[in-house]
Length: 398
Image 1 (cartoon, rainbow, N blue to C red):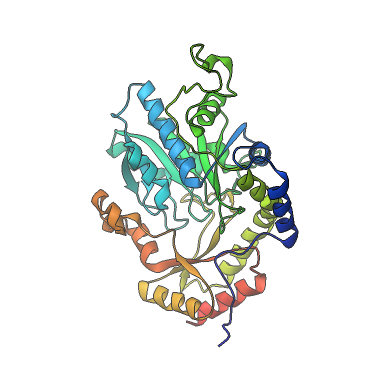
Image 2 (cartoon, rainbow, N blue to C red):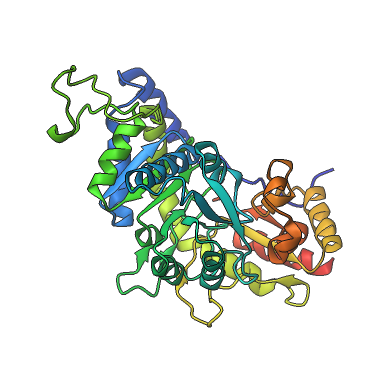
């Protein structure tokens, strides 16, 4: 029986012309590991985001791991490790935002989120920092491309001398609309991570990005990405007692991407930018306008003070039901009619076996509500305005 929709989470981004180019690349290019296309891709993002430096990694997870390693190194240099080894996370983030920090020796502390945008707020951060002075870092993680007031979150951290870092894997094209220069949000943190993956706002194959405006940080990340090697680095890092191409200044590892990954990602970049900036926000608005406000909650671009400041670039279309029974019914409708769904980024972390020792989800009512009552559908480049409107109409009938 033919289903009403053909709506996968993601779609093949590569045209037949792209695939011919990839085939040619495989025949012509001599270097498939680290090569020129990696730097070209990094330079493209430096231009798009308006940041000084971008570092490409093998995945968003390894980008987060490098940021965590850098933070531990900073604390060690300042003599504050392990005194400041706690990191504050939103409790409904994706697992790879948190686990690299735990593996390195940090202790996670979780905060609940605002119902309006499913992200931690400045007040949440202030409350958490006032209760626990051993929190030395806040790792602000975007959720589905939505945000609270990041600048106020950053100020709340600065007031307590706490480092503010960001995981922007789901918000690659989200802008800070209130800023006079209409900044991309990664400019609001000392360093931040991003990702390109099959159902994210940028695709290609798989990989991660780190952005920073600090040249010293950039050089550190470059060395750590390749086993700690000083190859290609300024003379100040060189050790005269060892071969200049095989001098390990840091205890790094292999976080590198490949030349092929970078080339494939470059093919999709311009399309992703146009689709993301011009179309995703419009589709979300249409979807939410059509959904019945008494049946479904809405994502808002305003904070608790009513300030509207973000040009969102949503990763997906969230469906936030009033109760668990309604969510089960809505998800079943989607499954039965050819629409792939996912929980709200895996749900509340404290509901998962590996994280239960860090607290109870009952202490985080909004994240628990999103876990029980929310899901999302994909927002790939094949989604049309008619599909979005029809889905909203169908959900309203349930």
